[in-house]
Amino acid sequence: MPIDAEKALAAEPRSTRISWGHKDVQLYHLGIGAGFDPDRADAATHPDELRYTLESRLQVLPSFATVAGAGTGVVGGLSSPGIDIDLAAVLHGGQSVRVHRPIPVSGSAVQTSKVAAVYDKGKAAVLVLRTEAADEEGPLWTNDAQIYVRGEGGFGGERGPSERAAHPAVAPDHIVRRPVRPDQALLYRLSGDWNPLHADPEFAALAGFDRPILHGLCTYGMTLKAVTDTVLGGDVTRIRSCRTRFTGIVFPSETLRIEMWTAGNQVRVEVKAVERDNAPVLGDTFVEHS
Image (cartoon, rainbow, N blue to C red; front, side, top):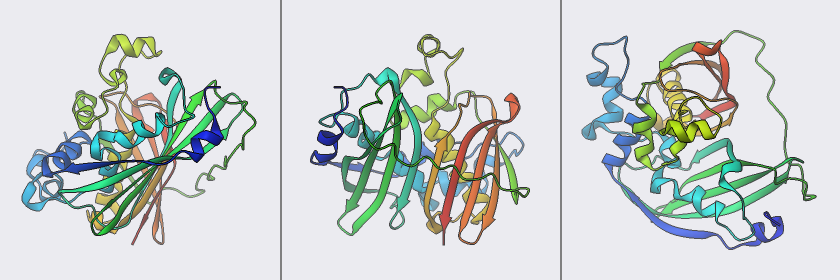
């Protein structure tokens, strides 16, 4: 049986030591569009962007946790005992990151990965792969990746949560547009996601796309940066968590329409692809902050 839920959930967590420096953080920020705005000639040197790109002013966006250690946490989860699946059937369904304190610009940590849940959706299975990182001072972050595996359901397991947040009944408090550079997927993949789906037209065609698509986690990072800059005054230390559900794809050279609703210590977000009649890209997205 490709997925043995009981065996997967009972497996011992896998741990590895990871490290990162300012160049890893800067590369990640550049990969999610820092320093780029075609409508602002001084974008590359503007103070609002230098806090993401200049080592002497650098802060770390919490979504960096998804690529720290080159994204090895999810890879470790997919190779857990009880998990034997065709990677071609795998889709990234959702992502959440919770930071327990600000991520340092450079550091090392022990990263632990495990299968936190296995859900039976009938025609598919959903794996929740949890990655936790801690350094000498204590916990740093917790990542949950929701992995949708086509054709692996029907094993009699729990169906799991399926609620969707109702669409806000009022207009967004903020709407911003963020362009996706033509080469953005090529730059983002240097942070560790080498899937040829995001670079090779022939591979993308085999997957059913007429050209390579942007990484979902790149869209996720672009969105968190937009919320930080628009609502939180650019202060990444105010972010507590960000969760999202991937509802569609993005192609390089498209424009993201990022809609935000603010309420207390939470920002509700929806993201759409402008050039395709505002096709949904991210849904059920919430940023919690101080």
